[in-house]
Image (cartoon, rainbow, N blue to C red):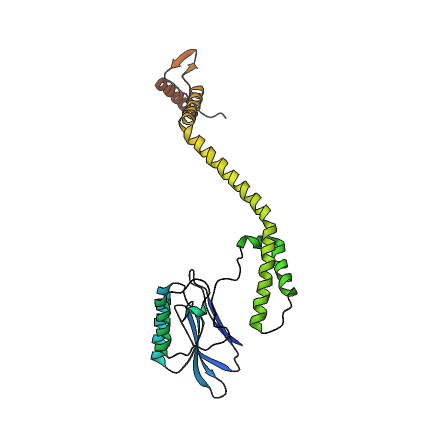
Length: 269
């Protein structure tokens, strides 16, 4: 077994490609905007082939950049190419459920396939290969200890026979029903937490409004307290040798003279 990987960049997901090293012999790795490529020798005859793993951006501008880079590589290097992955694009509305795709986007994707001479191989019987998520899952659900265990138990208890695609669809269907009931039972607790949070926000907002309203009065009271403390701690006069010395300047001079005299006296033996 051998592998190659491309780390994620900002919001884009990373890519990893793995292959049987007894069948494919890697000799070069290349990558670009939304794709990871591996040049390999395939089979006993050692046929050169380039396999590209794609995870295209969702926006059309990023897809155009991806298509342009791949087109330049395929047309420039030639040889055998296998391009696979998630292009985040379709060639017709039959491949997508939900809102209709923009005709211009589908046309540009078709042009890319035609210009690179790639063949769109049907890997499943159904034409539809892209659509909305089968159900919603909220990140907060994972904070509940029993959530993962319940999901695993529901998944493992679903015994379905048939093709793998059909089995996956049916197991997801049963999991969706379980999550619907589980989240419904969770709603009272969520509503209580939501109401508590709203009450706390209202209290904070009310306190902020009262502070703004009474801000001037609070400020005046604060400064009044500070000034009162200054007055209590202020030294207006001192008594030196039976003489009452008053005034800020006079008090400072007498205090300075007193300590100066102390430091000038000889130390005791």
